[in-house]
Amino acid sequence: MELKPMFSGLVHSPEEYPWSSFNYHINEMESHLVVDHKLYIELGESRPERAENYRALFKYRFDKRLFDFIAETIKLGQVLGGDQFKDQIERITNQRVRPLRRGRPKKCE
Image (cartoon, rainbow, N blue to C red; front, side, top):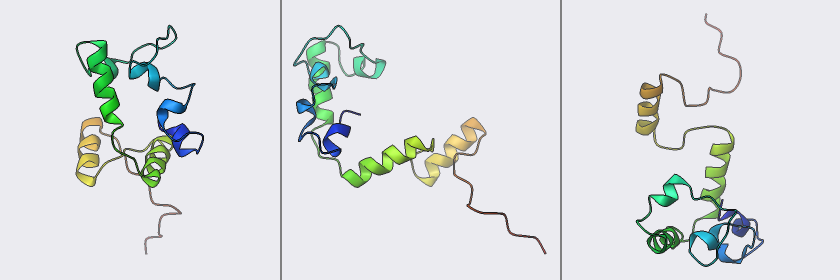
């Protein structure tokens, strides 16, 4: 989510988008509106350590096509991962995670 304004062409970096929680999470601003997520809290023992580790997550540029693929996968409610990972998820949940083939099933002769 922090990268969406950048990929939408609104800003050049996440720090530039004023309505994002990015600057809060990298310890550049205070906010009484932001509630730290459990995953964010697990990034470190202190707020400065978490901020440093959070900033490191954005050190590398993401390919817009990869970002779009991830967003589309989430939107469709699909599992993102390789076949082996999907096999494990299907075994654990006892549910299909791959999309069905499009169209009607072939007639049996």
